[in-house]
Amino acid sequence: MDFSKFRIFLKNKYQIDKAFLFIGYVPGNEALYTYLQHAGYMVVFKPTIYDKDLKVIKGNVDAELVLHCMIEYANFDKAIIVSGDGDFHCLIKYLSENGKLSRIGIPSRRKFSSLLRGFRLYFFFVDDLKHKLEYKKRQRVDQD
Image 1 (tube, helix red, strand yellow):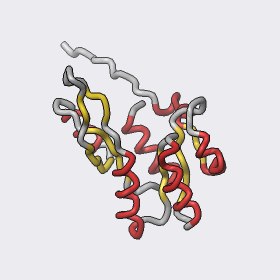
Image 2 (image 1 turned 180 degrees about the horizontal axis):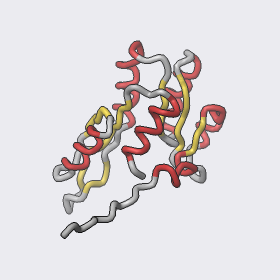
Image 3 (image 1 turned 90 degrees about the horizontal axis):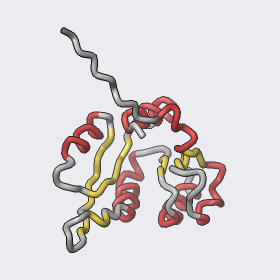
């Protein structure tokens, strides 16, 4: 997915002014983080956990997303949560009950938590937008 296109989609379709992106921090990926910031995301880093071979195995961002949503709660009218993870059920329920939930972006139509099924009216499926959001490698044009 082209995250720049996704950010533009969120702004144009849902008038999203602030887009937070929660990601595990991995040294050496600074170019990616800079790209995401230039694309318009407010990047929030989570420390990552490594296995014994120093391979990244986890960058759990669930608590950070919930905490930041509550920190920013007074600063937004509506939120879009992009996740199919049932761990966000309590946050989604709270936002919905308080008129603060706009949409839920489910990454995969085929795989998402059954805990979210009660919120189907809010769903949009990111994989349905693949043709609009796919990353297309730019062809290099040599000029001699």
